[in-house]
Length: 137
Image (cartoon, rainbow, N blue to C red; front, side):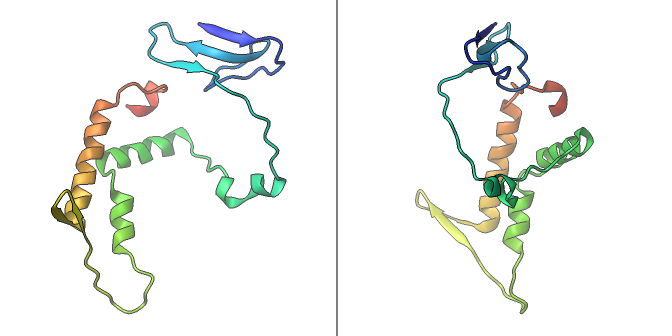
């Protein structure tokens, strides 16, 4: 199902939906699994320097690279956290011990990483409603 506004002469819409003779303001698949509804529009005036800054620069990833990154993430969803917590910018050898207390229980850094990893892996098992199903196999 599509709803569009022909009075807004933009042939655009959410995700990969475009091409109608007006802005797509509502789209839903036949099962109702995915629904997009335009809730607001806003005119944005961006500085050209902001658009070209490194913070806003897109990183182009082809399908093969995406599949590898996704497989790596599913295997170890806290890899980046583990690597960043083990790195140090100090040239001399330094030993740092980190712990956090949550709900009256103290967790070591390794215990926290294991808990976060379990939560993320559980979330991956329960998340199965991707827009691009073939990419997430």
